[in-house]
Length: 237
Ligand SMILES: [Zn+2]
Image (cartoon, rainbow, N blue to C red; front, side, top):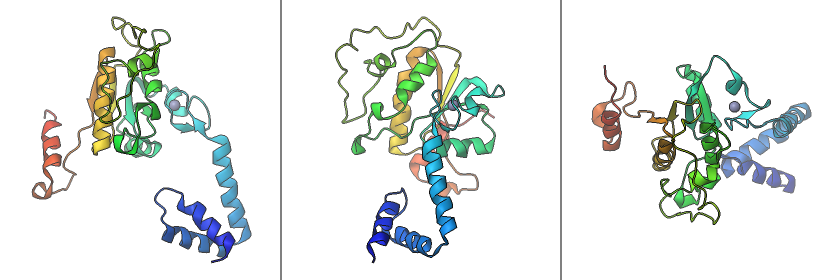
């Protein structure tokens, strides 16, 4: 393989979900493409890296800050749906059933992969929930009430320990409910538990999306965990 192609394959293979086989196929396709197509692709890539940033409120990707969802008066500011990624946000919003605001974590807690609370946009979430003055989100995150993920016990740094944390007698801002919409994976569950324990002291209702049997799914082929969650997450009819 010629060196320039090999280099392109290497770069493409760094993208998520692209293995070496796919990268090679894409590279050969690009080599055969006309120059204008390739220029357009490069321009689009540069455009997103130059123009897209994180919304300072919800941490979703946006061209304007705050983003259009955070400034939309039709969206209920009292309900925040917490998701792991911008793609999860899109998946939920596409349904059109949720008309509140969002918060994007940009990942899930994963002790095995060394991803701890500081790697996610949790401090920004806490800051958002406490609008009665500037809240030192770090003190909430490192408070003894918030559990550390297994195997990655974060020792609180000196200085944080003296901070009494937010005044719990003061109702936290205008947010009434936080819906945690992380996936029902091990990491998703751990993240949901962590956030729930972090938020509950603020006096805000925390709920978790019910996961369970897929519509059209067969009960007898579902695993025990799925059935258990479907039962636990049952809604009154
Ligand atoms: Zn936003």
